[in-house]
Length: 125
Image (cartoon, rainbow, N blue to C red; front, side, top):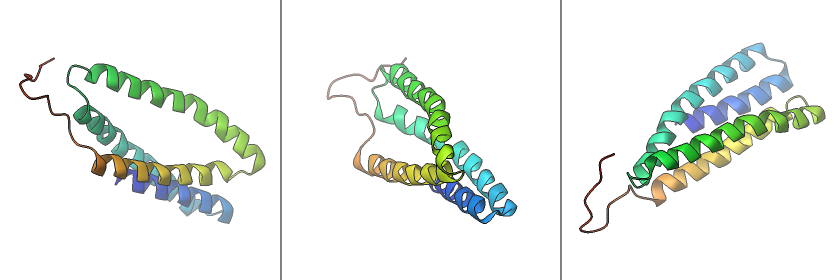
């Protein structure tokens, strides 16, 4: 649900920027922040449930590294898009978040939690 809220927020921000609506901009901003706050713990939970308990630290570390890289490259890409249109970064973020939603749904439905191989004891770390 966090992805739905965040995608809606980005799209509302894009529309609010085009229409010049402060209400839409503030509502969209609140939705983006709320959606992101909902996504982060859910995504980390999904990643940890799908990975080998002995590898969870490394897998979550890689996930955080990718998240940090996105926080570096996102503003750079946003600046380039902003040079073309001031609302293009918002529309692009909304569309990418909808794509993310499709990927999250596919991952949640298509996979299963980690199950140790038969005879293998579950390691506690």
